[in-house]
View: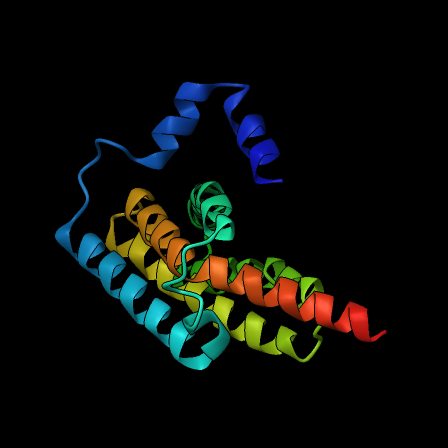
Length: 183
């Protein structure tokens, strides 16, 4: 899905897509500091509340190798879409900064409900929604603190994905196969 989205972005005008990423633009130090803090705080929080993800974080596996391109692609595509495109669109429609952050975070969280569906755990969905809603808010703050240059939010998102996503995938797959075998 992310590869298709990336191709759709790149086909019409690859140069305009790369300009969206903000490479070469000045980013205030606060943007980078906030990106670092968000990466550390959200990753540690996730590892604290999800022991099954924490137990997987230092394991070496083929799943982690497969998760690397997913982490990079999802970090780039999601930040370009949810922060750069959506927040700028809401800004162009004269929504205030708090509305831009709120709507971007709500839609970001709603998309991530797929984790609950994939894991076949409907109770998990509220937890997923709330945690990704908070992450969406935090990454929006990074975007704003970076003077609306998306690159620091992309770096933070990719780093978070690299730390927690393999464990999330492993846990969801394990839980799904357990439920399938008990049916």
